Structures are given as structure tokens and as C-alpha cells.
Length: 320
Image 1 (cartoon, rainbow, N blue to C red):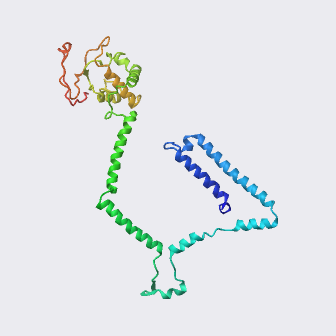
Image 2 (image 1 turned 180 degrees about the horizontal axis):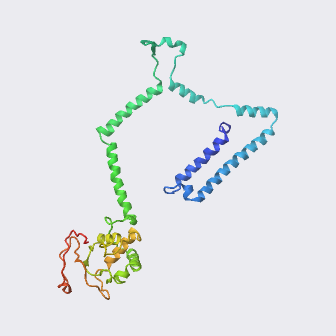
């Protein structure tokens, strides 16, 4: 069978089969494996060279063996090379499915009386393959009807679409929980892991102490350790302030170009961890007394009795 397929077909066919297997089994994300991993490109080039070398070696061996034959052997070899498989079983199956055709000289036996402007109709038998397909389609239609519309044991295409949408939403939410850098002001949550708080402290030390002091007691910026907030004291409020900046013209700048979403969530969580601590030189309270949503009325400390305090409603709007 080898002589029936030329080498210029064999080599590319085998090469692309190997190439497809590599792409299937190697996880390379959105990129082709040979681009993601250059070693795979070298491997594929080596495979191509080996395939070409095998073809050359086998061809040379055949030529040497052919030259060593006597004349009768050479004739037999050439005769075998010229043989083409008949595929008799395949041809018989094809003839059976195709059906019997009337020879053109016998078509007068099956011609019908219909005549349309000289165009006549032959009463040929339908090909068996067509009939088998028609019978199969009828069986399939009955099974489909009972399966989807009578018993309802399988979902229709609309139900499948709804289920896939629902599953996709679940998978997206699960992915967002693990992909912390996709966090935004709507999905941010208070981070309590020690490593997150440690990273938040590092970011705070590198970027925030100039205005808020190392202990959060406040300087140019407000005191971060008391219960009074200018723009709200929830994790979402603090994240929003870090991301978008503070009050126009006199608040802090936006850090979203300098910090990743995860970093902003970490430093926001660290800032909230400073609540209740005692800084060395705490700045006087600024803003409004912050009451978390759903909490009971907070007792105002004695030292704040003389200060105008606006108790923030459960749904807090950020001050300008």
C-alpha cells in the first residue's frame, strides 16, 4: 500500500498528525503550543527532518534492492508496483446503495405519459441510500418528538441555552473569587488574611505615610484610626477613595494608575485594620461619625461631645 501514497503526501500527513496531537495535549492557553514553548517548535522541526530522512533512506534501500534483482525479479517487482487494489467489497456496497439504473437504450420502458413541452418523466426507482435515509429520519423524528415534547426527558435548545447562561454566571463568579485582580468597587470585600494585610501595610508605607503618618494618625490627610470619615468608612468607600481619589481640589489623588485592583483592596483593608489603634499624635477628627450599615447607634465618646457630629444614615453617600 505504501506505493499508492506518494512521499510528498505521506510526509505532510504524518507531520500534521503529530502537530495536531502536540496542540491537543499541550496546554498553551490561547497561543499555539509551538509559539508558547519554542522547544516544541524545535521538536516539530526535528520530526519533519526525521520523516524526510526516513523517506530518503527507505527509497535508497528499495533502489539498492531493486538493482540487485535479476531481470525477471525486476519485472515482477514493477508489475506489483503497478497493481491497484480493486476494493471489490466497497464497490459492491456502493452498487447496492446506488440501486439499479436502466440503460439509456431501455429508458422507453419506464417513461411516463407526462409531457411538459416535450419534457418527459422517467419512473426510476428511488436509490436505496435515499430510502434508508428517509426511513432513518422518520424514526429520528418520532424519538425526538417523544424525548423533547412529550416526555420532556431532555431539555429543548432554549432550555439548554438558559442552563448554559446560568452555569456561565456561576463559573464567572467562581473565577472572580480566585482572580483577585478583577476586583472593583462593587465586588471588593474586606481582606483579613495576614499576607494581604502585610502587603497592604507595605503599600501604605511606600505611598501613604507622607499624608497619613506611619501609624495612620493623620497629617496632611485625615486621621485613619478614629471613627470619623469624610467619604465613608466601609471597605467599598475606602477602595473607591483610593481608586478614584478624594474630594475635588483638596482630597487625595487617584491611585488606580499606580496600584492594581488587588493592591488597592489590600491597602484599603489595612487602613480599616488601623481602626481603634492609638497613634502617637492623632489628628483632630474630620468628617462624620461612621456607622456601618445595620449596626446600632454608636455611643459618642466623651471627648467628642462638643463636636458637631452628623450621624451617617445606613445608606451613606460620599461627601464632596
